[in-house]
Image: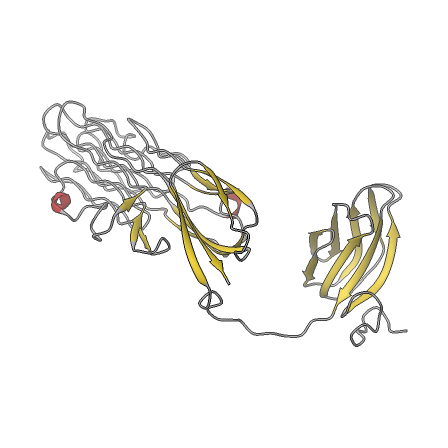
Length: 366
């Protein structure tokens, strides 16, 4: 009889092929500790009653996994902690696996189709599609700062952040929430695909705002631009990037695009000063000047929908040189999604033209 750490040939240890049966335990209570050690490898703890539960392999570090799933335990362990329904019987197996190499461009041979989602609801994966999809999640843009009675000069709103997922597991129905664009002193809303979300953009500072009124955004992807008048010449500040613990998750090799600041105003009280552009998912907003507003930061460009689109660009301040075609919305010549608001002239004109969020799912059919 082979020892626990001696892996036999296929089927040699009983159980399914290449899975060596170790032993079974009875759950006298729902919480049990089993004094069973082992070396690194692939393990699975199966429930006889096919119940849900959790198992922890405890050593110098601890690895946890649900019942009835294969898990790679990369360290030696001296005991196993179990949480599962009382009176179930659990059986431990150790797997023997062969080495492999990466299968490059795995989706290239399959037909693919984009699902562009612009309103909240559900994404339903077609029955004949692979259970793995590529996803882009874009937050909504923040509102622009309010302008002066005649000169304008509010800061541009920031674009929403962008989260991209590759080979993300999707089965059946996934809930979707589309973030709405920010209004006056309003941040853009978060956009959700299941539990994964992309933050919205912060709003721009008002033309005559105080020294704190330069980005407006707690928990936003990018910061809006400074207003053009009064105390807006202080140092740039950039928001923190999203992480696994703030909605990004760990599945689907998540990538975050965002974390950019808005542009500054000149920092004095001249009424002709213009504010800075809002930060975008692909770059910082530009500074404003005398009779010259700052352009918004670039967005992130992706062709996941079938053509190149820019996601999360920042909005420009009133009077920006980019108003003829080089603002953060359209500097790349592409249709904007999740963009920050442009600040315009006129009496307290506020956040016109912010962009709602979006989710794009590309699924594959063999």
